[in-house]
Image 1: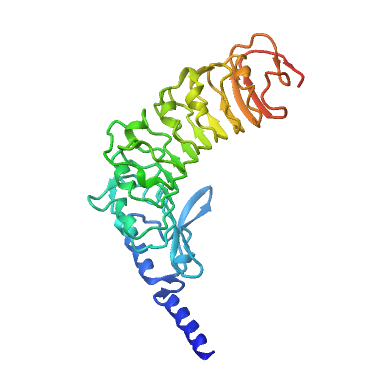
Image 2: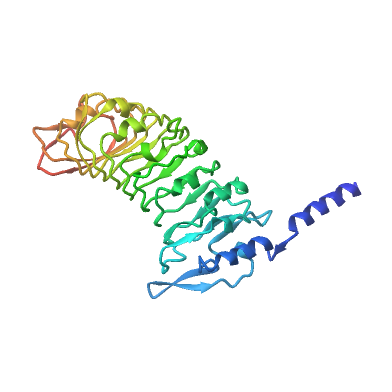
Length: 350
């Protein structure tokens, strides 16, 4: 019995070894090594006269800092929120190796830090050596170009990757395959200048994002040719293609391949219909946003088969005749509809 207690004490002591006021000394030192690049790492922001004023953290325990979260048992850092910490900097290059001491890191957010790329041989591929728990990486609102993809392709543990509002174009295809992203479930690429997924993510064996459920491509340069590229994403549940260069009619063949799709966002384009007009077979669709396109009231027949649809946003620019909200051409018996109509009309049975 005494031996068991002794063993338990030794385990507790080993867990506490190296802790400094609740956080690991090695990781606390690593946080201060990051400070020249993310100056507000040990600051919190308090509102004062409608402004956010930085105030230095009073605690020496880094686990209590506003931008840091730790495992309560091990005291190791699990989440880092270093957003807008270098907002006054010119564009600069990150040494990603500085994050290697955080071996239990699960989420890293570097939003809005003017990062243009990584130091040579010190890119995000280095994190694959030790950070096998890293699942969420947010690099949005920086200056990364297409070359970042080769570095990120090594991070096989990622489940969510955000590269929105960078300067990705897809014009410089990478030779790297994205086969290591087999666990990726969410990918955000909005606000770039991409016109083709093929040049970005098709390796020698093609697209391998087999577990992807959320794909956000809003505010890019995609046209109707994007849909065949998406057809392989059979597990996709949410697709946002708003504010691109879609126009005319969309062929439903490739769209129907996304059989698990629940949310479809196509707003802000110039789409006017689907071919064939009654060919949509996405039975799991619950939310559809077709607003700010060129539809007329004939679009209702295209949506008639969507029996699970709950919410629809749509502009109808040319309304000829009446729209029957509960007739045979009406999708779901009790949806929550939001219509933004450009011409006066009458709605029956509402």
